[in-house]
Image 1: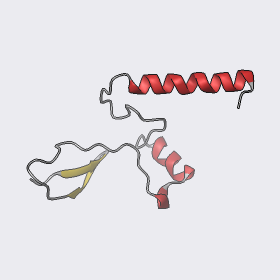
Image 2: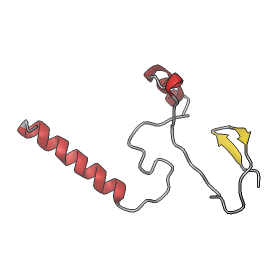
Image 3: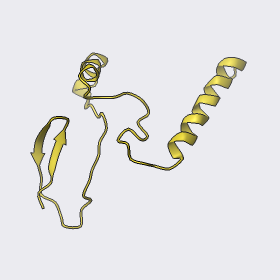
Image 4: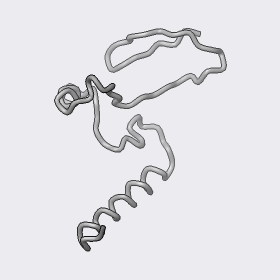
Length: 87
């Protein structure tokens, strides 16, 4: 097998793999340290090549309730912290 590595609009690498390897590998908006600046991220975002957020289901893959439960929990904790000035 020779899978193709792609990014929006272009392919950029091929690699050898094993016949039992996963068929799909998805990585969302990963920036390596050299390019991991807000300026660079905002440029990519403006072009529709990146997205910001917790990214639990950023690739549109159904993951069950884990993202909703975690996000709701974090939202309520922060609302409680701000409203009640809790630590």
